[in-house]
Length: 125
Image (tube, rainbow, N blue to C red; front, side, top):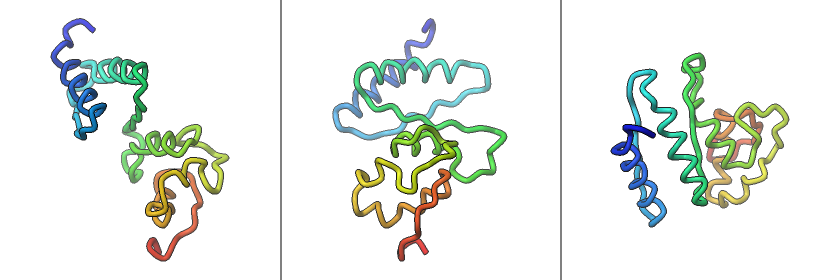
């Protein structure tokens, strides 16, 4: 990517820190049409090629009033679903057990993000 070396370096450093066990967040913001999507696509492709799990959310101005809509793609991928608008979603997504028993009791909270029908637990009623 021509002219994006500093931005790619920031993203590369963040990825290297995550691969070393660190945590963090990188916010990419700019006016429309300045190459944010291209920059992130490039970085995500490189990360996936190096064996990293890449999760991405996407905001949609049409659905801006839908709670947590930008997280649909992330949650769908984590749960092993085809996508955020899956119509034939299993009653218990395949990856749900792998989230662990502590998160199991809160699983019904995913109903607000994905088209799921998980039962409430005493903790989520």
